[in-house]
Length: 246
Length: 252
Image (cartoon, rainbow over the protein chains, first blue to last red):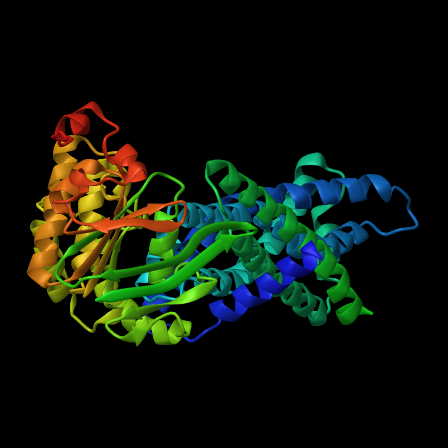
């Protein structure tokens, strides 16, 4: 019953958020601001994690494929496939759920408990549309770029690992990452990314928007935002994989 | 004029307001006073539509506000200015941007026009040279003054103030009270102030409602509040040593 209540209120919040903007120029500016806050501010962490993720993947692959029966270019191929299909869209989205999700939930939660959201409402501004819609749109625009960057850096990280460890030849790895490439896999990854971006922004926003109380509750909202957006990402990952790859 | 008729509001099975009726007069500062937890802020929130009353009606100059949808309320809300307890300034905006915010949202004014209006409102609340500061860099009194400047930027017909003096030192609290009274007269607004500060009551209480256990317990003004026979109001009014000294001595 409690979950039904929250789901209903989440849908109601989305309905309010997707209403016609008050003044389009201001909303457009808000989207750009959010793209900077939610996207550009995450470039560093996404880059670091992606390079190391790719490097570890390639090294583990090299250790596990220790047989002459499997060609060594497989390391490049499997690294690319893993990064492209799962690691970049899902794992990086989970990391963004932690970084961006907590930011969104705590920002809105603080605005709620300090009556800033009430102030917007009193002015006759739809607070959900003004505060939440730009975050959702900005995440859905910027996250695919972050994930694309992550894919490139992770594959690059694998290559660098090969050079430094000498576990596999660079030429074989490069041949592997070019092998059996299907454009549909990229499409699948970006569909997942956009859906996950929507979930991160909207689920975290929901947790912050309805915060009641004080600092303790804002912290709780922030944690819940991360937990529930992560769970929804994992659940939707299964659903989308079944729909798009089965 | 704002009229609240038979407003009731409960949270769960706990009634907070029971059949409260108030008439808030134009061009005057109308005070809603009472101890903490008696329903003052809930009444204020029901009047401005931040809370939906379980029953009762709210009229703004004859327009029934309580029956309106969010979009219909917009028109009236653009005529409302509100000063929240903590100021409720937008943290990410500077003082100047906070004051210009309603103008940016609802008018087609150019930036120089908005700046001119913001500067006028800030000078009206005696706050100059703070335009580029952020709310985190302001003192409590400055925050309240910026919030008043923002509230009057759109020339509101109605001004609501929730505990405007809370957390302020006496001179600053006096300044805020003076500002509220001056602005009310200047713009001929209907001003509603929720407070439990007796200094405010005696300074600006042109019409006073005393709320007790969710009901209107007493109604009057600053001139007759000290003569009250109502025991609950007496307890509220004559708590401090200072107000005890103001207590009229009964003769005979």
